[in-house]
Length: 192
Image (cartoon, rainbow, N blue to C red; front, side, top):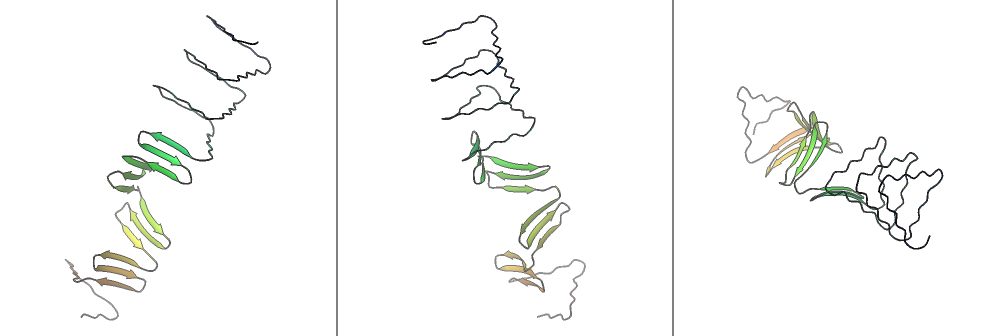
């Protein structure tokens, strides 16, 4: 057929193709459906798109349910945007928000807020580990700092250091106050 074709149907239209159905459109194609559209594909679906693909859902929600695996593979990057919030997956995973980002697993939570606060909240135990150095916070109120070489507390010119064979304290003034008792024991005790 050459030239234009117009088909107007005021009632039901059914097409039953027992074999293969192929449609080739050499220029643009527009479909406008004023009611709901339902598709049921029993033999799988494959879509090949060149020169870009844009989909817009206006004034409504979109829901996708997959009763199996759902995989997205990209060659460059994957980005999700909502107002000023962004999740960007490329060589690294980049998450950005003007207010707050939360990572929640069970009751454990990492919160990064725009006011400059980073909160790590663990139900049982929080550990910071680098090689042989470790800081551990337990839910019972115990704080443990350990290191195979040295554990050091610093404040200005004052320092308390713990090494495998000695404990040192250095400051312009050191106060020891025991409301019940102060015990000093050792192989040799030197005072001044």
